[in-house]
Amino acid sequence: MDLENALETAGRLRDALAAEVESARRERQLLRSLDAAALFARASQRGAFLAEVARLERELAAGLGAAAKALGLEEVTLDRFRLRVPVAGERLARTLAEVRALAGALQEVDRLNLDLAARALACVRGYVEAVRPTPRAYDRRGARAAAPALAMVSSKG
Image 1 (cartoon, rainbow, N blue to C red):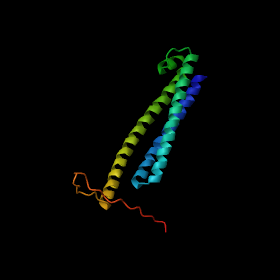
Image 2: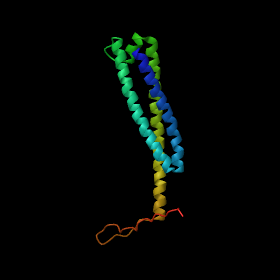
Image 3: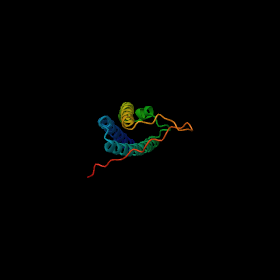
Image 4: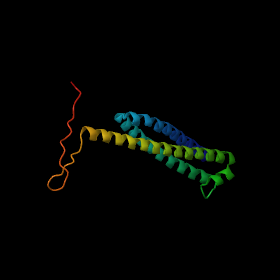
C-alpha cells in the first residue's frame, strides 16, 4: 500500500532528524574546544543531512500523493487519511507530529550553537587583536596605516 511506504519514509525522516539533533548537541563541545577540523567535518555532515532530508521530503510528498490517489482522495490531508484509513492515518499523524517536534528542537539547538559560535568568534578576534593589534594611525589620505603581515610559524622541525 502506498500509505505504508509514506509511513516508512516519514519514519526515516523522523530518525534522520533525531540523529541530527543529537549531533547538533554534540557540536557545542566542538565549539567550546575550537576544534576547527572537527567543525569543518561537522559542517560537511550537516550538508549531507540537508541533502538527505530534501530527498526524503520529496519522497514523502510523492508517497502521500500516490496514497491519496490510490484511496480516491482529491486532497492530501491528515484528516482525509484518518477518515479513509483510521489506523494508518493516525500513525502518519503521530509520526509527522514527531517530525515537527524534532525540527523545532533542531532549530533551537542550532540557535544555541550559533550564539556559542558568535561568542567563540569574538574570543578569537579578541585574541588576534591582542597578539596583532590594528594600527591606530592613519596615512596622509585618511586611510588606516597598513599593518605588517602576520607571519605563519611552522611547528615542523
